[in-house]
Length: 238
Image 1 (cartoon, rainbow, N blue to C red):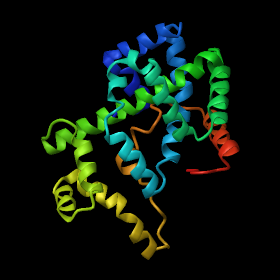
Image 2: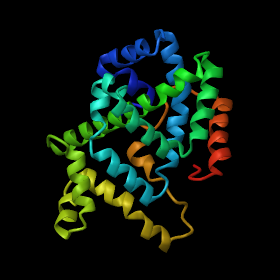
Image 3: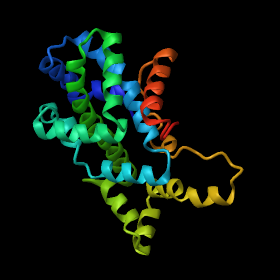
Image 4: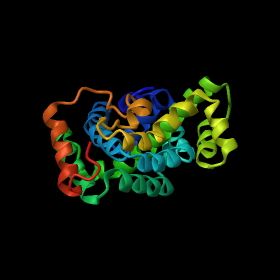
């Protein structure tokens, strides 16, 4: 699975980001720099919002619906009023506060020279595009593993969350399902073995895909972490 930067730049064979750049009046270099500057915030938001089994379950449920795939496949939809509304909802979950979004935009402006007004408009477009890309990557991987078609990811999640014994057995027959059950079933084991360091559930499934895909200066990443800590009080801190 590709990390965030590479996933975005490969959308629609590279045409998606070029189309987005034109829409916001940016050249290719400005667009690449802006994406590089924003990916640490998205990566941090994704990681901090998948730290517990409950949080991971909510994220997986939203992702597995596949509703955001349309935005990855057609960037013009991501910039539509409906796409922007969906994007702002995603930002609310990932960033947790409009103050975080503003601070992220200010930091990206300082790093790229692209104005905050443009970056603030770009954030929700990127949010839906990222969710759509993550769904496509995960679903494609599951298709390859299971030999299935359609929304294999959503079907498995429905089975696993359906709570029926037959559904659990069906999910267990899928190697991806076994991995998922191991992730979500780990909470009870951790209670029995408190001395063991709790594992971050996203690592096994989304570790690479949640990465920025670009080397980030330590100081820049530290500033991103400080933004989340300042406005969220360390909530969901990695």
